[in-house]
Length: 387
Image 1 (cartoon, rainbow, N blue to C red):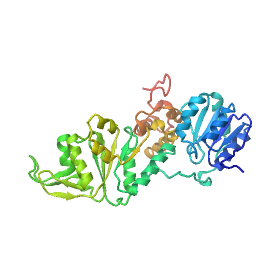
Image 2 (cartoon, rainbow, N blue to C red):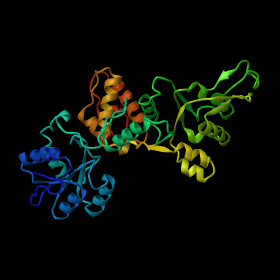
Image 3 (cartoon, rainbow, N blue to C red):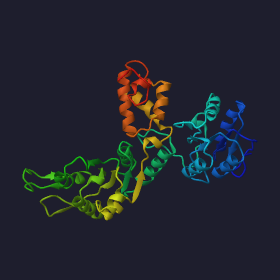
């Protein structure tokens, strides 16, 4: 029986499977054995490094959750010490997440030979410890997005302020909405304010409201958006764009739960959970005195960083197929060649860019499958005749 302290030994393996899940290890080993490919198993990161040192391994299948070493740290070690080895990450069910490029054609061929057999359905495999469900509306299977989902689910139970960071188009608003829906405030409103979209002269009135006659044109009193979020959630998008003067007033609300409308000396108690989001490094802005230290520390009690799509291995195909089904009402499809190119693209515009690419491609493909030339991405088809 395989245990956490001992793993099966195969002399000079071409493939090593590293996972704490014995069922996943055995299923993958059987696939390679059926193909007469020498494969060995490792029960953790340290075990995998030991086997890499004593073999001519060409392909490492690496579980995204290991019991002894952080996956990202292990990847750095492998890249530094074994630069010729291809690494293929596995999701929580043992399914491979295809890499953007292969170092070795031999390793690619190893995988292609063994991948003729399908893994058991996910429902037949035991869940790994720490593997959780995705957030409502979130599509993905990558380790980094499972980490985001777990953090969001944990903080949703509390009223702690949350700071969502990550590049534009990475899904910060989706995560904010999921935190709200998973919280005890789900029955109330989530009010969204884009701090970059409202002119500075109007931002205070929009946030805090005003009374009749507070300024020219204030012909009637107006309840601000913070007040509208009472009992629910206030989502402050692009918080890094908020003017310094407004930051002080926002801090007072977060600390005391009170607001004052423009033109009035009366204070109102408002109970609203605060979630902020930014694609700017607020810590750096704070060092430059462009963002208040006290507000930054108050907002960043529970930070969640969303990775760019380029780091979410295995999620591109899932997202692309999801957008095709959603935008084409189940009638569109992607060719294997188009999917392969989508996996190789770096996606500087993240999930938002992918959705726009799929929407355009569906129009160009008409009733046929989406091919590389429909994607409109540089290098999709060398010498393509299409504009």
